[in-house]
Image 1: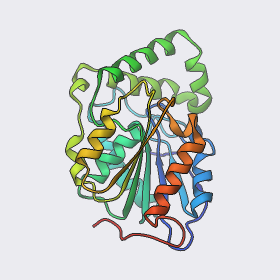
Image 2 (image 1 turned 135 degrees about the vertical axis):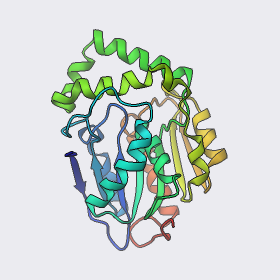
Image 3 (image 1 turned 60 degrees about the vertical axis):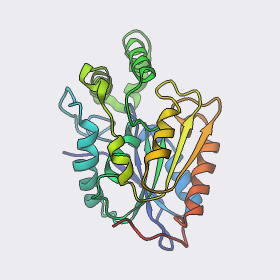
Image 4 (image 1 turned 30 degrees about the vertical axis):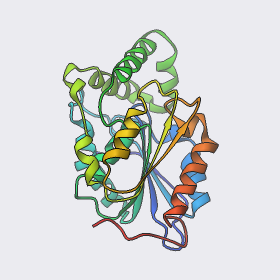
Length: 259
């Protein structure tokens, strides 16, 4: 399977690579210039990829299984890192990408991981998640949403949307929960959450704070929705830079990788 990817910046002075994992409707292009801006500000290299069925990656078989994020975190992500030659890194995950990052980080098999940045992570299903995803389904069927997404996903647009929407609305997905992976996280973690997120409440953040096996910092952005890096890029960028600097994860400093 062929996956679309992009690199920007070069890790300087021992800095790790920032590996970006997109949301349920995201891809390389939808990150826009945010990875490059964070890389330039920190002296880290950045690696961004589109999961199968998104952007210009190969299509994915549908329907997605209820455990699709487990498969991405436990089987696919390690192979992506190996293929890209990345051995020291910080994961920057948004929404579903943040959940995949949690699964990988808490699995006990993470090698070379030095930090986590989680935007709007999901660790369990909530009523607000179901309501937001149902509303997205209506929008996809009745508004210009499909056309807008097609600019980024091309022929993958229906695969990207229905692969995400159908599984989240599957009755078996209602009990989806990845809290079991939180105690296995052994690296410093930053959680950024919009206070007005229509896909998740602050209980997601609190669960990470209570249960993660390492230090957790949280930034709650008033007036911000589900995508801090897109809606409040300056605030999100400043929070990420401060976090990486505080843990010596920028050019000129590092912490030992997880073992």
